[in-house]
Each structure stands twice: as C-alpha cells, then as structure tokens.
Amino acid sequence: MRILVTGASGLLGREVARLLVRQGHAVTTFQRRAAGVDGATDLSGSITDDDAVRRAVAGAEGVIHLAAKVSFTGHAADFDDVNIEGTRRLLRAARGAGVRDLVFVSSPSVANSGAAIAGLGAEPADPARAHGDYSRTKAAAELLALAADSPEFRVAAVRPHVVWGPGDTQLVERVLERAARGRLPLLDAGAALIDTTYVENAASAIVAGLHRMEHVHGRALVVSNGEPRPVGELLAGICAAGGVPAPSWRVPGRLARAAGSVVEKVWIRAAREDEPPMTRFLAEQLSTAHWFDQRETRELLDWTPAVSLDEGLAKLAQHYGGRTLRTP
Image (cartoon, rainbow, N blue to C red; front, side, top):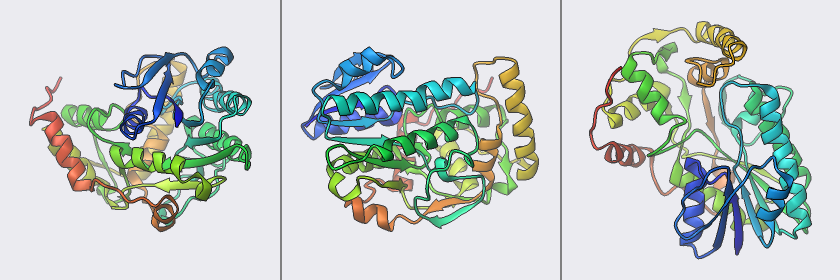
C-alpha cells in the first residue's frame, strides 16, 4: 500500500513508519521536521496548513494520523488548532484524495475523567469530562474521526496507553531527569496499578489496525502491554535502566493534584515553554489505577504484544548502557 504517516518525527510515529517500511509498503512521512526514516519519503509541513496537507495525502491509500500537540500545559487555542482542526483538515483532504483507510491514533485519556480505571475497555470519548486541553482536544478529534467512518472511507481509532521505550523524551527522559535531581515523588506510595505499552508493541498494534480495518472500522480500541504494575515498581525499573536512584520520598496524591492545578495556572500565566514539574493530569496518572481489559483488542486486531514489560526494561538498560545521568 501507499501509506502516509503524520507525526513520524516522534518516538511512536517513527516506529510505525519503520515497521511499515519493513513490511514493504511505500511510506511517506509528514511532519514539521524531518523524521529520517530509512526507506520512507519525507515531507515537511504542518497539519495546520491546508495546502501542505492536501499535498501529503495525494496518492495515499491509507493514512495513520499521529501528529498532535502533546503537552501537560499550554494555551487551549494551540491544542484546538493542531489536534481538532488539524484532524478535521486531514479527514477532509483524505476523503477528497480517495484515501481508503485511516487510523486515528488517540489516547485512553479521552475517556478518563480522573477516576480510577480497572479492567475497562474503550469507553466513549467525552471532551466535556476529559481533564486537560490535550485530552479534551484528542477526545473531540477522535469523535470527528469516527463520525467520518463509512464503507468508502473506513476510520478506526487506536488508543495506546502510556507509550515508552529507548529514545523516549515524553516519559523516560523526564523520569530520569527528575529522579536524578531528587524531584520525583511517589504519590500515595506508588501503589496505583497502571498499564503501559512498549513502543514496538504500540506500533505493531496501530499497523494491525490498518490491516484489520474491515473488523475495526468505526471503533476505538485501547492498546497496552496488558501487564499492570504498581507505578512505583515501574518508575524504579526505568530508573534502574537509566542508572539513577529510584524515587523514595512520598507525597499524598490529593495534595499533588491540588498543587498540580495551581502550578498549571502559574506556568500558563508566565508563558513558560518548558513542562511544569507537576500538573493535575500528571498527578492523577501517578496516583490512580488505570489498566484495561485487552481481550477484545487482541481478538479484533489479531495481535499480541511481542515485547514484555521486563524485556522492554532490558532494552532500555541496553540503550543507556549502564551510564549514570549527571545530577545538576
């Protein structure tokens, strides 16, 4: 197939593009900066640019849409422009270009109002209840994408949960940096049980969604390794792989959530570009259970994770080569 991958400069998008190339597809990547995927054609441009999006989808038979504004804080309008309007623009262009299939890469946070999740599947996306502008706009975008599904233009949503792996700047590097500084607390003793997804597994599930479109179009599926662990154990594993001390000091989750709400407002008012040390959404993720029933996902995608959680941590340790991060 001729497949367009948007947002391929990120960890997951790059892995998706690499997998498609290995499978023998003609792959084009589209993002603001070069993705550098061997065997793929690179197109530079923004999902907010009509002309650039039309050029990107021209000739494509399938699209995997990962491009998004991903952050714990920022101005609401920026999330709206990229995540909602960018998706709307891509859907319109893809239909006009005769694209057959589109996989929208979403997030379980689109259906999470902050309460614990234990063994649920893909609940309906709900922008009104989602916490934070990222989750709100991804929820609205997922609803747009699934509403576009038809026999002629098949659309599915895949929600990989907490993706990580070597080279990950969104989770792994932040954990290691903060742990090295002694600024990574355990909320509620790190006891919350959470699912995560190793990057190779997330990529293979997304690509399976494209190949299994006849079975999954019009639906949303949550993807994870299916190996829930206490968050403290997961953080300790990442820290061990990166050669930094595991977090040991504890903060009540309720206090962290309240503090995170205040910190978010301070960061926005100060127009800071860096990520804040804590937000309400991050505190919720670190202090409440969120793990998912994977039986339906695996059946519909005809897919199982190839890399276990412990194997992923071993790959992470190999990536860091036993080097210890220098504490500032």
